[in-house]
Length: 195
Image (tube, rainbow, N blue to C red):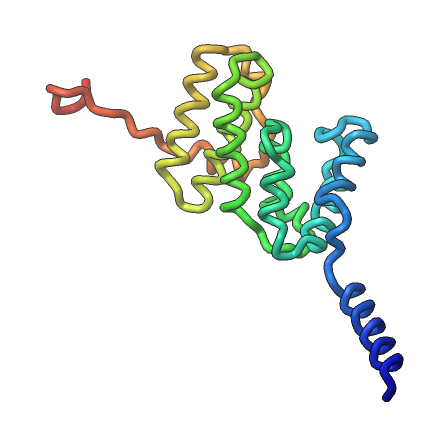
């Protein structure tokens, strides 16, 4: 084989390797951003379309998925609230493995962002995220965390009753999980029964 043949074979092998490699030139979640910007309802639009795009991106990013997702979500409360469903709801997973701990992490971050803000929209995000985090925490066995989220939800509703409009829709199973969370009341010092 002459020198030019070796160079030619090297180029062909390089091109095959690049064709099999994940496409790193596309901006992570760029197709989702484009869709959200153009579609009616944005993040609150057709969840099935968003789930399809999300799962395509999950497959494309491979091992870089978590890192890219966390960067993509950033400080956006809508993303923190709505993206976790694509990580846990069976109807959105498209044969992908559920990622409840990553979903809970995103909800937790969204809660912290919403706590910092005092406007009505942030308080609505806080309530909705707290309900979702309570249910997910209970499902994966973090009872104390679930109790804390439920307690926050109840305190928000007590102090701002109009936030009931931000209560998320849920199926019967999730309603049962939420209702099963028992908030442990602290006993008052100096009494035996806490009364």
